Image 1 (cartoon, rainbow, N blue to C red):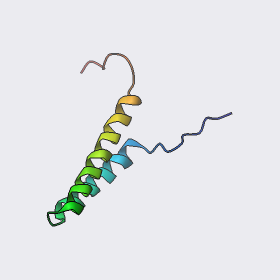
Image 2 (cartoon, rainbow, N blue to C red):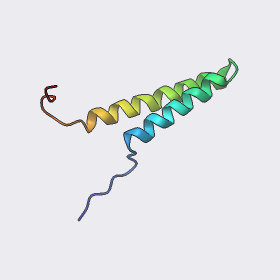
Image 3 (cartoon, helix red, strand yellow):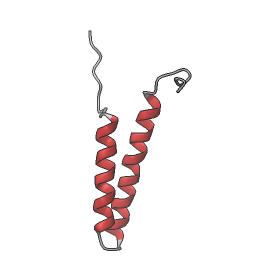
Image 4 (cartoon, one colour):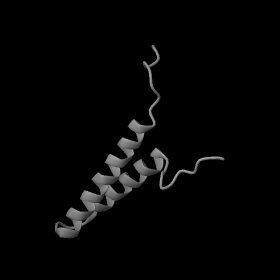
Length: 64
């Protein structure tokens, strides 16, 4: 029976979403809404980074 991924999005989707959220937050005027938008963009960026760590291949990197 195949295992289903619940709530997991590809890393590229999370990175793109984080970049879009950051750009949108930067265009907002200073204030509490902008602070929340910047915080959410940071959370998305951290999620993308963590997903990369969780699904990284183990072992030594290939020699150049």
